Image (cartoon, rainbow, N blue to C red; front, side):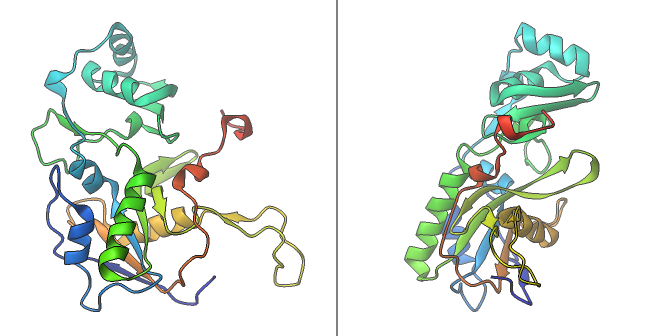
Length: 252
């Protein structure tokens, strides 16, 4: 379960993605020379998934509500963007001038409900929303890659976000298929034989962060990373399992 070595490989020359593109076919076409192997984990940037799903919004087409206008005034943000944030969210967790922290409909707590304008590839009035159902998308991509290559792969969709109490963004998993999003080590022995009591590892987030190192977050143009060196997982669970229920969240 814990290898002494992992390889993290960016898939080079991956093409720009647009609405309707088949991500699974692109992954198959741009596989490494050795092809895919059992246990390979494909880390795919959220942005190309959203682009393939056509999740673009032209802010010129958005009419802000009174609620959006009021929040935009408090946060000094574009009322059209705030309207989209509200429509993509179930709750506004925090706000101050320049910042809106929202609870996205997927359960993620992040700035601006994950709406982004960087690397969108259109004019300044276009933004990109998060994918509709990242877990299902991962499952669909995995099934197609397995079907056409015969390799037992896993798939993670990752995105970068900031963290409470810590500066800097890092990659996290927002969609998972083919591996457990959380690895429960409770009751396993530690080095001295004592049973672990609370150790649940966010393995999908750890892999997502590892992949983001070679993907980059600027102009690298490497939206897919391949993590190699783990055996195939026997159990799987979705990224939605990572979201801590509100009644267990001491900081909300």
